Image (tube, rainbow, N blue to C red; front, top):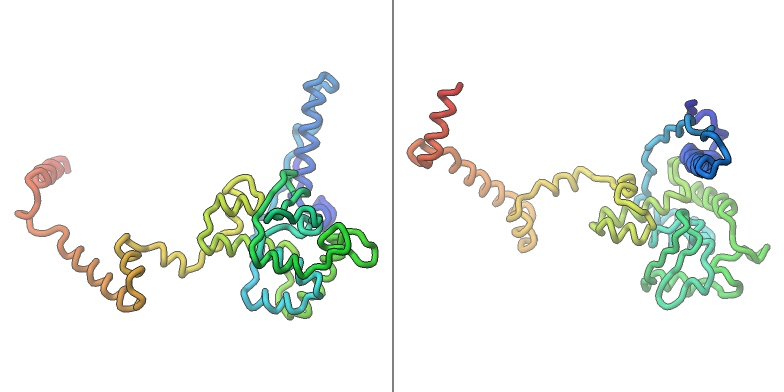
Length: 276
């Protein structure tokens, strides 16, 4: 049996969510077979949905500033923490003050069910210090005196996006996490540090946060002495010119006259000519 993403009902049941539920169901039914409760797994032939790999956009620096300025005070604090830490909004909303102790934020309600701790930087501490400590949770709904809900935050966030005049319709709460993790990777933070911060279990899962630019691609085309020269010379244009000349000079010395070649190389060339 094959399903398509059109078979699921709207955004509430995204293909990736359906796949996770299907995996759980298959696992439960497999256990039932193992325990002798079923003869066979009835979901064995049910295939997972195809998941589109469209990359989530990232916010520019200007969009981040505009968005934060357009957010109400409490939402601004949440969005700021999300942009700093890369945490999911649900993880931030579940934070209690007791989870913000001893120089760490401890996320207990995570997507994969594993506890995660990240150190509190001065910027994170400044955001926390600006929040009133009147309830158990860091972000409390003043009307219900319960934790803020993702649905309520999402509605407020969508209005802030409109006020910020961000001209795209693909900016969601998850864009904050995607922007934060993409920035960390672009800044050269190693994958395992980003994984410890984000809670991802494999480097493969970080691939969607990598957005190589043409400038970064060009920066990869460097021989060792190029980076050494650049580290010692602030004039990049002059340094590029000197490096280009150096490489051109080096290449002119390759493949010189026959007498400059080693006897072994001449013998090898002669043997190859006999085979051709």
